[in-house]
Length: 119
Image (tube, rainbow, N blue to C red; front, side, top):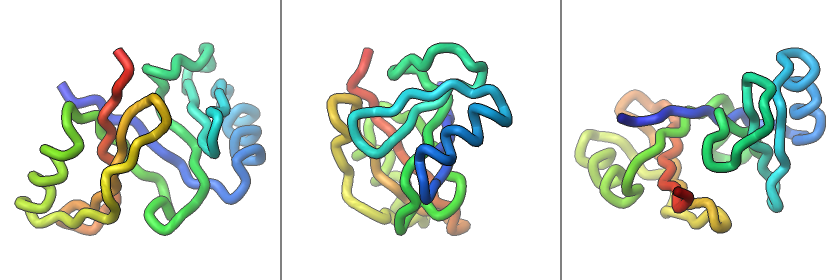
């Protein structure tokens, strides 16, 4: 089964975190780099099982992005290209947490492939 999470872009991570906490009751956990994990039920954030995240706005993350948990970023990236999608960046290591790669689907929507190294 594929798990889907979300990523929301922000110009100010602190301001965005406060917004989602105050408006929707989400809990948040700042990682040791510019990224905030969120739990939409307001429970303590489990790094290996967060519902989504808030990231700095960048060239790929301009609007909300679906994060799709995959067993292998390399294998799925190959399938993306074969199916008419586009790879937007190279696979990147994200701390000790896993690997990510941004892609566009056949319709131009940006997705993030995520391969966890956490059990």
